[in-house]
Amino acid sequence: MAKKKVLLARNLPQAVIDRADDLFELTVRDKTAPMTPSEMRSGLAIYDGMMPSLGDRFSAEIFNEFGRPRCKILANFGVGYNHIDVDAARAHAVTVTNTPGAVTDATADIAMTLILMSARRAGEGERLVRSGAWEGWHPTQMLGLHVTGKTVGIVGMGRIGQAIARRCHFGFGMEVLFVNRSEKSVDFPATQVAELSELAARCDIVVAATPGGAETHHLIGADVFAAMKPSAHFVNISRGDVVNEAALIAALQDGQIAGAGLDVYEHEPEVPQALRALENVVLLPHLGTAAEEVRTDMGMMVLDNLQAFFNGDTPPNKL
Image 1 (cartoon, helix red, strand yellow):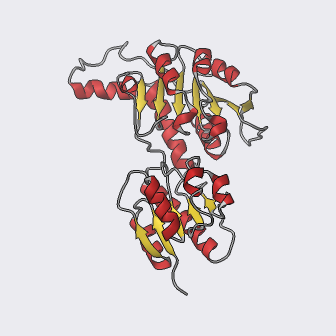
Image 2 (image 1 turned 180 degrees about the horizontal axis):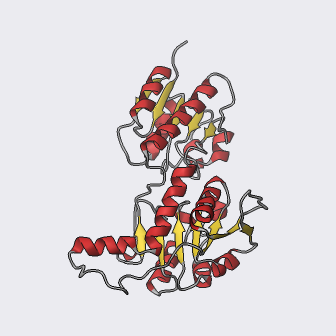
Image 3 (image 1 turned 180 degrees about the vertical axis):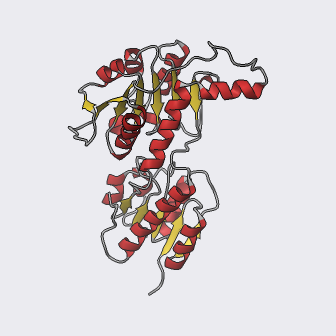
């Protein structure tokens, strides 16, 4: 049987490429930028399967140019898939999968990195040392928020939210509050609250860990930041458009909150100059899963989904 034609929209760790090359007639796209509309359309016509990733916006308009495209599966690289119109894909007989699980711990680790960096002003301090302007230690230098024993609020108690909450509770003795779209029971101390505004008012640190998509677009905006304590910090490791970025900038500029840590942005990779100019925000370049073994695991999960589909089985991570 002839091998299926598969496009990987980004380069991946070598172990993944080697396995993919054994399994499929493989094309690896040599660009790091998102696929253009013409690339997506031609891919749907040329390949049997594709691996898109963040920024490859497979909208209803892209699919609507086809009845039943040759490409029958989009095996997304990443747990988030709000860049793919899954309903439109289904309507055109295209299966969509993702890579949950593999990203959980790595993303939770980045959340903790941002919590600590923001609360302890680590980014600001590192810039001070690099500038040559540091004049030495003194008792009131760059006082931040002591994280141990504080209250953390998790917005979205899925796999990643729970992993963050566990690190906060067991690692730092923090009280955990959370909001979630449905009732959620967890096997560690955590209290679900009904309203996001209540969570914001009660917590020292608020972490967005909810999926992206229309239901959560601008979920966190001016009302949430107004409810937070002036000493509180906000962290986002979910999707950029979960947060109204203009409202966050205003809250940081006006001192409504003490600081923020961001790994994602509303119009990524564009980061507003007003945000970049602020000292009280930590800005990371979407490092959530940026560890080689994690990216390898994600790539292997993509291949598992593709292989199962082409073998006539249900992919393990079908959406």
